Image 1 (spheres, rainbow, N blue to C red):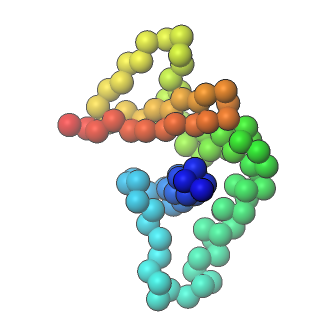
Image 2: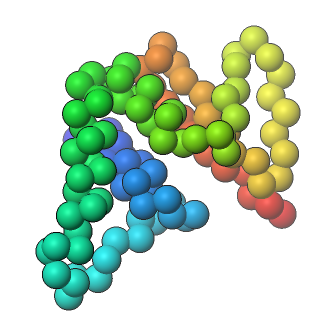
Length: 101
């Protein structure tokens, strides 16, 4: 249950292209039709992610070129403001950013 909640939070952050970890959802008074684009993006993600391996691959694709992959066999060179990710067994994804100051 916790992993599902965390996965959905990550998905919402990726889909909303928000710069913070808190998803920027529309206010509750907005009509349902305004939620359709986000729902369609979520459905496309779920269709492309039938298992953990595909979910990780889809999520990496959504991270885009801004995020740098960290490899276990290479030293990590983290810089302030950098965006990074790594995987474990291609079924787990960890993505993070380093604070600028």
